[in-house]
Amino acid sequence: MTTSISEQLEQPMQCEGLLRCVFGVSELDREVYEVLTTEGHPCTVEQVADTIDSDRSTAYRSLRRLVDVGAVSRRPVSYNDGGCYHVFEPVDADELVDSLHQYLDEWYRRIDGLIVEFEQRHSSKSRQAADGERV
Image 1: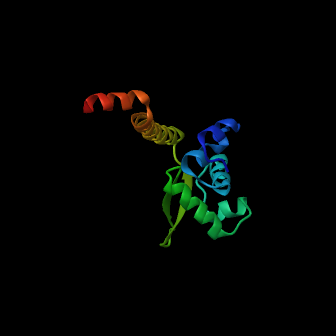
Image 2: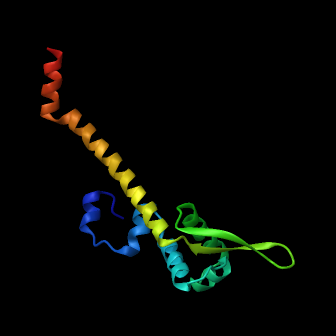
Image 3: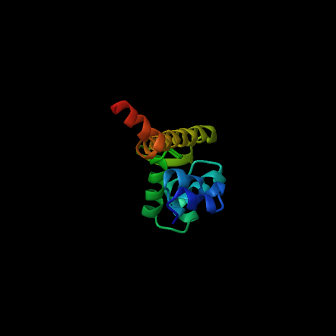
């Protein structure tokens, strides 16, 4: 797994890796997200588990992570005779894109702040200005 920005930029970037890159979801989570987007209708945990050939608890954990990062929504559906179950579906693409932009903007602000801090500590211009203030 790459850790530095320079290493990440050396790797080919693909749309499929976007959720992993921004939200840190697993490959299985990405696969579950793809299932939900290709099905075209809300899915139960059982439907997802069957599609990815996994047990129900594994599918649920993956769906939960996707809900937690805001890529998937969960809503209850009531049985006619009482009780309920939950279905999962991807959030609106525009909503997810807005969220991705917000994360990217926040990341950029933080990195920019670190660059400014680095410059203040290590730049010869900054040291000269600080020395001039002390005189």
